[in-house]
Image 1 (tube, each protein chain N blue to C red):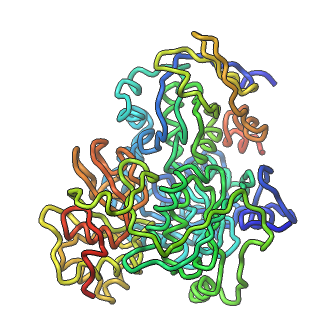
Image 2: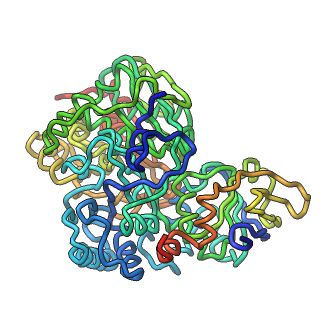
Length: 422
Length: 167
């Protein structure tokens, strides 16, 4: 019997020929990611424990992305501590404030390869399954253990597969696909499980769109979210120095806990309503809901294709005077590309505030929080109570197209009706 | 081995509903605030009395998908710092469950738990048996005991204790 992607990775990483759901394995970590909220704590624990050398400093990536630019003295002090320890432990892959969001930088800078086991102190580490890596979030203590030993325990998850068919209609995005899956199957359908996105339509997703979908796999509970590494993935990897890789996917006779079909053709723009990611309705159910803020960015949807999709709608138009539109490119490279492509010009001319690459507003940290009674529609990944400031604010999640159309209208709007100008 | 994860834990219940997120357990605005400050905001949006009045040995009983959201270990850490002796939920989000075990905070997944308890009730949790008993009504619910691999970490007092011991 064949293996799923999760089983293949965990078998290889634990030195076994095969593993089955429910088994506990101790696996070798291929890449460990720590961001600035937790890095100072992780280093403090390591020093207190007397750990002088990390398992492999070349398999560690440190990113300052959540508290950038430093919104407080405490954050700036934490960043100083982190920089000192990056030096002390000889970590070469360090991205200082402004380089971008960790889940954009890892694929963009060539840190991800198919089949790698990637752990990060961030729940959205599932993102890296877009390139067929097994990425998952862990906490501070487990990261300390992983950095000291290079190993961590895992329970082999069963896998749910989504078989995708058809093609998306204009103004419908892969963000709408993952929101629809959450709405249809619930926010814990994949709890303790892995998810594979496959079927004939999977390869039609751009790498950026795959990153969006896998990013939100954790929002349906998933431990890992995967696309197979196909020709498009291998081409993306080759541009980042990984030449000559083979396609990597599940065995044809792999065993799944469930297989669900999903037809892209009939999908409409989707919106997750407050305050759960699975509280999803088609756009028609929420059109006209007044908004105060619109946000385009985050590790979910802050990539070039997202900024360009928004720019195509906003070009030559003005954001509604009652709306604050915030745009945060996912990385400096994305920002530079969007400057070159004209997307940033179009967004700024339309009235957007362009923020530095980072996580600030999305995780409720700083730079775009909401007051009581305010409403925000954003391209990010969570709309929980209190996620972006006030517990009495409301957050709606949607695609860049829907958020851009809503920013124009001052209320949640259907991008198919608003249309684009270029 | 007795003690640790085999002991029966009895305490006063603080009851919460479904989908209690890490944003509620540990709001992003206080991400790097000191523990003494941070824990005072734990679940305040759901019950402002909770962080002020929770005391050592109390229990949290909640609905499904408890701890959904972020990988922030500060979520279980805040509960532990407020004195919560055990969290029982209909089900847990996976990273919260791992983090709780990693820092030595006992947890029990027990479907039906949230429907059986109200604020202020007394509950008895037997982690070894995986059972939850309502001290008032005597009703016993059967949960899912943690696998031995996770109970070992819990019994040690967390994964850093295991690491220090050379495990």
